Image (cartoon, rainbow over all chains, first blue to last red):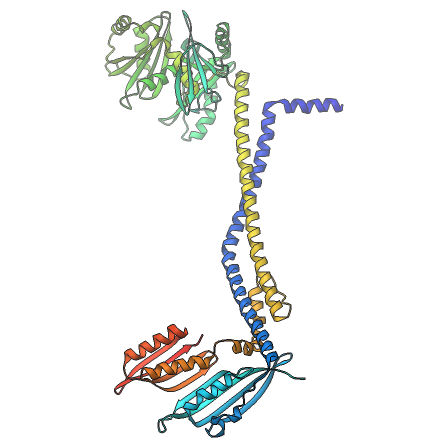
Amino acid sequence: MDQGGDSRWKRWFAEPGNRLLILLIVTTLIWVLAIGVGWRTFQAWRRWGRQRPVREADLAQLLHLEQTVAQWRKAVGLAEQRCREGLRPFEYEKTPLLREGGLTLVRNETDNVRPGWRVRRLRFEGSDVPLAGLSDFMASAESAIPPWRLVSLSIEALDARPGRGRVVLELETVEKETP
Amino acid sequence: MTPFSQTRTADWASAAAGVELAEGGPRVVRYCRRWGRLRLVQGERRNPAEAVAGGMRETECALRRIHVPLSSRRKAVRVWRSLLDIELPGGMEGKAAIPLAIEPSKNGWDVLVAVADREAVSVRLEAYRRQGFDLHVLDHESAALWTQALMEFPPEKPDEPRVVLYATDDRLTVTVGVGEALRASAGARTFEGETIRRLLRSVGIGGNAEIRWIWCGSRVESEEEWLALVARLAGGLGRHDRLKDPAAVLARAYACRALQDGALRCNFRVDEWAHPESVRQRVRRHVRIALLTLGAGLVALAGFMADVRWIEASDREVQRAIQAAVHTIGDHLGLPIETAPGYERAQVEAVIHEAEPRYRPFARMTGPSLVSALGRLLASARRDAMEVHRLEGEQDRLRVSGWAANRETFERWIEEVSQEDGWHMIRKDITPNGSGWRFEVETVVR
């Protein structure tokens, strides 16, 4: 029985028309598959065209942020190194502007920013300050170890007294906490 | 061959031998097809892959014009066979009918059909076989004569009445039409002018119409005999032309029609009468086309799949770079950052925004000094005799107001600080004031 069935299939397959039929079915299936995959490709291209610029912009921004954060870390490392090299504090109370120039310390505050580190901020104000002394004052602040940086300032020349003015300065530094 | 198709009768072959059984022996003309053009093949050597084409004589078959009184062409194509079955004596039983042309007519469509008895077809095939020709194509003589005459002597006017005469020693075939349209045909044993005139009358061509007569057949091979036949056509007004190599016209026509697409193509060897080799060759051709289509499908499939994979790989690459940047930022900040795909930027920005106050003082310590920038600003102002009245600054913003003796000095000063210190001016006001100019600028210190 099996042999009879087998030979029937063989006969059926031996017909050129039937072989062509099988080929046509396979071809149709391949094309259906190709059209399906083609549609998926088309959708992928569309999605890619839409999302790719957004993702690339995200990546560019993240790389920029990575650089920024790397600079921050480098800055922390530099601060550590400076502290190891030795301290030279900013002795503002000894500067001429504070002693006799009318500039006074109005705020002295500290804030913990990172474990083992604190930010120290000083605010100086004066309503009749000799402006020529400001550069020396700032130079001694910046040359201290760790250095002080100018965070904000307001300088207004007094019309009535040439060379003098109203001054507000805010300085900031980062200090290592000592146990 | 599908009905009314203009496909060549041996669409599977690239070479064909046209054979006409003449009194003196078979006449064979061979053509081959290269790049869609036909070339006459010289020599007697038979190509085993060529199609062999012969034809039914006019007296062994008939041309019937069936009028289908329907306006739809599609319906006319479907019903003409039933109408022919009614019109033919004895119906379609034992007959082969090949539709040649369909054209619009008054109140419907006219279908031109070549009809032959199956028995006559068998007899004709046997006659060819006896001469050593196993025909793949059995064409219709009149249709072949008509298309060959059209090819060699195209009509000069679309409504030109034309008569194609094929004359041999033992028979005459007459084909009549207008322009390119074949109207009727008839056969006779002898050359009779009356047969021709009757045929002309049957298709509505009057006795004094200007007719184009096209002659062929072995009987018009010599000029004298041809002119004698022309003279015998009493009232044969019009222009007379003779096809080249007139004795081989039919063989030429069968071969050309086997290889070249065109009107009125006919092959009685179809369906159960089809030559096994034709069927085999046609299947082989279809297999070749199917294989090519399959190959194209596989190439398209592979291309599309590769494309999708490339897009996905490209997406993964960008995603990997984003993840690497996120991890590096997390490492620098000393905290792990968990992000959802597509939201990395916003989530990292939020983390950095939160961390910024803890790092900003460190960054400021290593960044450019605002004091030295201010020093340069004031020095250049002093050099240009400008007065600075007010200075205000916070973070990286600086507002400066003062007085300048002239506008050019002020503009030069602005340009200098912009170029040398890289300051970006976001506001610049200057107004005349007494003998000079009062200015106010706001800048971002980089």
